[in-house]
Image (cartoon, rainbow, N blue to C red):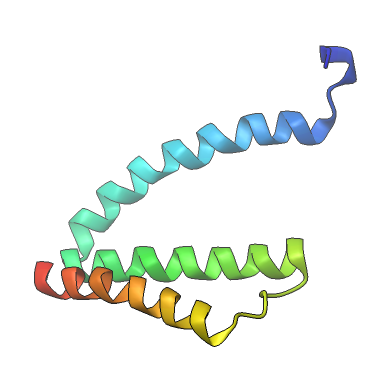
Length: 89
């Protein structure tokens, strides 16, 4: 793809990635100064979940239908993360 064939969306993505990446350092400084480590981790997970849910509904039209085996694997993989966060606080 040549520069002449690049779309405005391509340029928007090129600007968005470093802006978001750089913003995490600023947000990290604010979080460290205002929240406990447990609350900071919780807030980070909540923000990520909301962003992923919005992306799933906008881009895919909703969440995929999971079988009971897939739900068990999903919840089973989240348990160690939750326990490690509870111990860290």
